[in-house]
Amino acid sequence: MPTATGETIISFREAAKVFDGRKGAEVRAVDGVTLDVRAGEIFGVIGYSGAGKSTLVRLVNALERTTSGAVVVDGTDLTGLSEARLRPVRAGIGMIFQQFNLLSSRTVAGNVAYPLEVAGWSAARRRERVRELLDFVGIADKADVYPAKLSGGQKQRVGIARALATNPKILLADEATSALDPETTHDVLALLQRVNRELGITVVVITHEMDVVRSICHRVAVMEHGKVVELGDAYQVFSAPTQEVTRRFVSTALKDRPSVAVIERLRTRHAGRIVTVGVDDVTGSSAHVTHVLREHGVDGTIVYGGITEVAERPYGSLTVELVGPDDAVRAALAGLRSVTDVVDHGTARDPLGAPDEGNDR
Amino acid sequence: MTADQLLPLLWQAFLETAWMVMVALAVGGVCGLAIGMGLYLTRPGNLLANRPVFAVLNLAVNIVRPIPFIIFLVALGPVTRAVVGKTIGIEAFAFAMCVMSSFVFARLVEQNLVSIDPGVVEAARAMGASPLRIVRTVLIPEALSPLILGTTFLFVGVLDMSAIGGYLGAGGLGDFAIQYGYRQFDWGVTAVVVAIIIVIVQLVQWLGNTLARRALRR
Image (cartoon, rainbow over all chains, first blue to last red; front, side):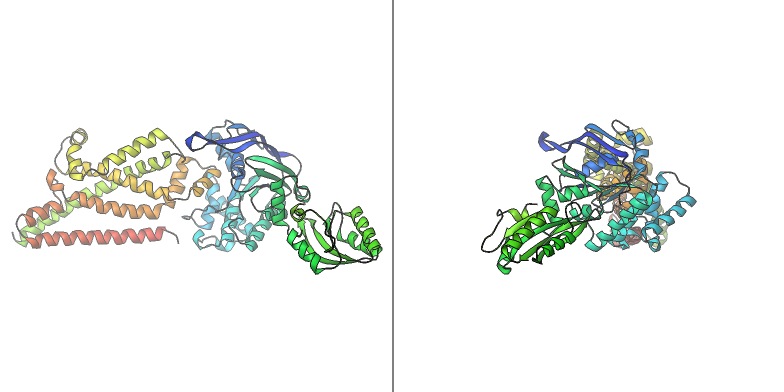
């Protein structure tokens, strides 16, 4: 469950980053972004590569400086701070990377100790803290191993331990799972969730994978061409996307809705009426669907679909073949519409729906 | 000349070469590391990006490096006189070696640093490390293995430079081989000197490879 307290910890105010491109052309990597990240939440920023999300996250620890607008982190306006003044700000923000970026010349323990050395901790305290962190991320046995000997998942655990070393309030994750296989991705996401819940750290996740947003983010911003085009509760954005780019991302994570071709095949394979009913905890649960069908004496056979979790709430759809007397089916359809979203695909003899309906959600 | 007469002279020549090479390697190593680091850091897009400084360093390296050492030796004459106080002798010769080896090593250092993953530097910055700390704890340790190999390469280069020490009366093994071998038509003496140089290079290369492998951490 969200641990967000609602207080703002990172605030972008019309923040923009313009790079001088070749031949004098400007590249507006981040173009006037205004948004607040709340303390204690896992905030996702999703977009295709080149959308500006990596630059956006680098504005938070000032690895990139805004060219206009402001970024306020935990009460400190980073605009115009000198490099020397920014160093302590950066030390209070952890960051993990797609390629892990571990020092190959240091052991696992040496890597985790690095930020502690920067922060001036004594050798004894460093040792203590490193042990604690390696325990937390579950690789205590690898302390004296060099990164070259680790798997991708282990490297990212080291990256996370290193990012958490100085007890930051914020953890930035830049495509942290994009170089990992699905199973390892799951483990690392679970670890990030623990970081958020057990340590109360605000996590900002940059990703191009909707699955990452689906499984751990409380809120999400969708970026395109340097701008935030959609922003809100992860569940809301999933269930009611308003932008084309968002719809495309949602369809990559949820494959529950049949495409036009699939509907075509379903209608030829099944004689009854094919309908798709939404299943979520805003409009209707599958129990409602069962109940309505039983009430009208209509058989509902599930022929396609899936239900998954978005932000830990059920979400998906079921495509059902309705079989029964015409009147009963019509009545059942009306009944379903009163409890959930329904898309009626009709029958083989009497097909319904626009040609592109299957992709339109 | 007999072996009894030649051996002390050979030993003397060996010591001269050893001294010249060590001085040039040490000074060239330190100055080259500094210039090479400067080139890397001031390169556009890097930690201390500074186009004018980069351009000046880059031009200096490009001008000095391709000049044949024997010509450089003469061209540097006025500078040598200003610094060492004379233009002949082993000190003057070693000074020229130091300058040349600094520029040669600078390029080697820069090339080795460029191969470091910029992500690692970014990670260090994200942890609040200052540029000086990044040089000390990230750039040098991460590039240590190729830097050791670069130093080995520099050693051979410096040994090669020392061979013409005779031109400035600096002596050394090269001078010995020319005086007592080549000019006396004593191929045996030349062969002995060449053999000594080959053995030295082999030993140093082996040492360099071993240390570099150990520094690689793989």
